[in-house]
Image 1 (cartoon, rainbow, N blue to C red):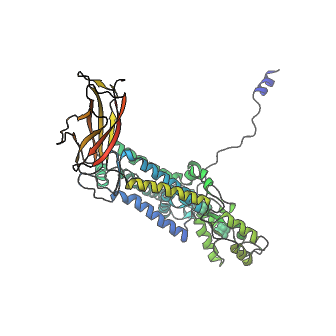
Image 2: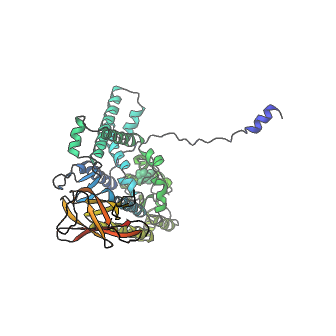
Image 3: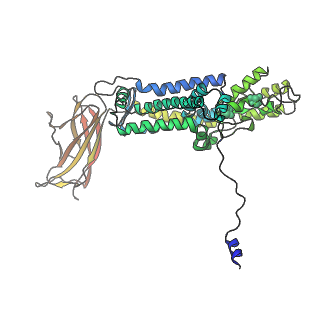
Amino acid sequence: MSKVEAKDKVKPAPPEASSLYAEHRKVYPKAVAGTVRRAKWLILCLCLGLYYLVPWLRWDRGPGAPDQAVLVDMHNARLYFFFIEIWPQEVYYLTGLLILGAIGLFMATSLFGRVWCGFTCPQTVWTDLFMLVERWIQGDRNARMKLDQQPMSAGKFAKKAATHAVWLLIAAATGGAWVMYFQDAPTLVREMFTGQSSTGTYFFFGLFTATTYVFAGWAREQLCIYMCPWPRFQAAMLDENSLVVAYRDWRGEPRGKAKAAGIGDCVDCAACVNVCPTGVDIREGIQMACIGCGLCIDACDDIMGRLDRPKGLIGFETWTNLDASTKAAAPLPPGPERQQAGMAARRVPRFIRARTLVYLAVLATVGGVMLGSYVMRTTLTLAVIRERAPLFVRLSDGGVRNAYVLKLANKLRDEAQYAVLLEGPRGLSITVQDAPKDAQGHPLIGSRADGITQWRALVTAAPGLHLDESVGVHFRLLDAEGHVVTSTGSVFLGPKP
Ligand code: SF4
Ligand code: SF4
C-alpha cells in the first residue's frame, strides 16, 4: 500500500459539516399597547414594587429581636417572615415552600401555558424594564435599528451611555435590594455607603448587580432560549387543554394583502413579529422560543381593529379548540362565514381534569401538613445527647454513671426555668452540673430567651443495682406548676449483667 493510500485509509474524508453555531440576531421589539401589555405593566409594577420595598417593611418582635418584616438572619440562623420565625431545625418548612412553589408552577403551566415565563419570571420583568429605558432614550424599534447602523457620533455615544448608565443604576438597586433581605436594610445602606459593610456583602451586591445588567441588558432572549432549562421540560406539563398563545391559522390563512380576494384575515403586516421580545413569528406554530408573553395578541388585535375585522386572530387558545375550529372552518372559503363557523366550534377550556386535580391534591396536602405542623409547633424543645466516650463510668463505690448533654431550645422571647425529672428504673438518680435544686430535689435548669442553652447531666445507678446492659430513660421538664412541658427519651448503658 502506498503512503498516500494508507493515509487515505486512516483518515477518511469528513462528511460535509453543518455548523451548530447560529449567529446572534439582535431583536428590536416594537412598543405595543393593549390589554395584555397593560396587564404586564401591572404585574411588573407589583413584582418590582414588592421586591424593592419589602426589605423596608418593619415588624415589631420585641426588644432585642430584629424588626425587619422579612429577613434571612444568617448570623443568628433565623428566617423571619412577619409573625413567622423559622429556626435551622425547622428547615423542612423551606422544603415545603419549595415543593409548593414547584407544584404551583406545574399547575399554572398546565392551565395557562408559559404564564410564568411571559409575565412573572424575573428575566422577563427586568428585561421589560430595561427595554422601556432603552425605548425612552433611544426611541422605538425603527429609531433603535437606525441608531445601531449609524457610525459612532457624539449623539449616538450620549444615547448609548445614558441607556447603560440607567441600566446600571437599576441593576445596582436590584443587587442592593437583594443583600437587604439578609441584613437590616437601613443599617446596611448606611454601612454600604460609608464603606463599613463586609466583603461578602459587597461581593453579593456586585454579583447581583452584574447578573441583572448582563441578563436584562445584553443576554435577554438568549437566556430564555439557550440557558434556561424550564422551556425544555415544561412541555411535560402541557396537554391539549392548556391555554397557549396561538395563531388561528384556520382564520388567517391564506395570508395576503388586505384588499386581495380569497385570502384569510392575516394581512402579513409582521406587526406580531416586530413586537415579539424573542423575535418569534407565532404564525409558524408554537415554538420553544415563544415565552407566551401575549404581546403579539395586542399587536394583531390593533391591526384587526384598524381593518374593521374581529379581534382574536392571535389569542390564548387550547389545542383542542384549534383542532375543532380548523375542522369546522375547512370546508368554507375565507370570509365572515368561516370565522363564525370556526369560533362557534370552540368550547370553554377544561380547567378541571386529572392532571390539574392531582396538582391541586398535592398542593392541598403539602399546604395542610405545613399549616398543621406550624400550628402545633412547640416553643420549647429538649434534645438529649448521650456522651459516648466513655459509654459509662464505674464509680469507686460500685455505682455506674452515664453523662448526657441537655440542649434546651427556647423559641420564646422570655427566659424560663424548669425542673428536670428523670424517669427510668428505680435506683437511678440525676444531677445537673452547676444547676440548683428545687424543694423536691429536682435539678433546676434555665433556658435563655430565643436561644439554645446547654447543660451537662449525670445519671447514676446506685451500687448493687442490677440493670440490663441498656435501659430506657426519659428526661422530662416540669414548669413551676409541675406540668410536663417537654420530654425526650434516651438510654442508660452499663456493664453486661
Ligand atoms: S399581526 Fe396579525 S395580521 Fe399582521 S402578520 Fe401578524 S397575524 Fe398577520
Ligand atoms: S410569539 Fe407572541 S407570545 Fe410568543 S414571545 Fe413572541 S410576542 Fe410573546
